[in-house]
Image (cartoon, rainbow, N blue to C red):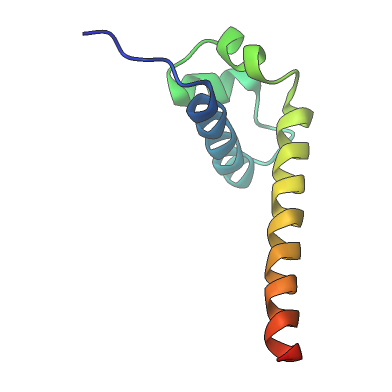
Length: 81
């Protein structure tokens, strides 16, 4: 039985793994090869989804900023009640 490829899940796995490695080793010392090896995929598999490490960290920053904004909005709504 073949596994169905899930691009969204693969991207999420790459981001999650990259963040873990960035925290452990630092952004500059983490290579795309490190991320690929940790995931057990090829570097090409990562480059299929992301142009660079910088693109990955930019997505992480945007996601965190959006998360903070959502929490602040919910907090403001509770205060305004």
